[in-house]
Length: 97
Image (cartoon, rainbow, N blue to C red; front, side):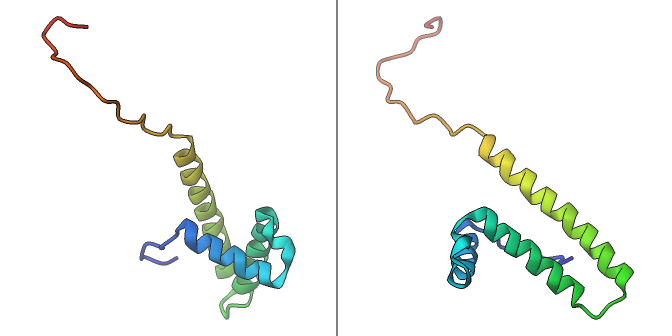
């Protein structure tokens, strides 16, 4: 796998989905687009000129990476948003509640 960090963003994901939708309108549904991405990944990996056991090992690494990205995004979505800043006025003194 690449040693350099991937540059994943919501904008990139949307552009990929838009490109898939231009080929198949059903890809406007993200779950259909995900199926295409999985199929493309399998196709591209199987088409590489390397030993089959290396391909299968790489497939296992990709599966683990997919789980890592999925879990990372889910955990980010679970984090509550920071409460909006509230205006304050007055003077606080020790002992004030």
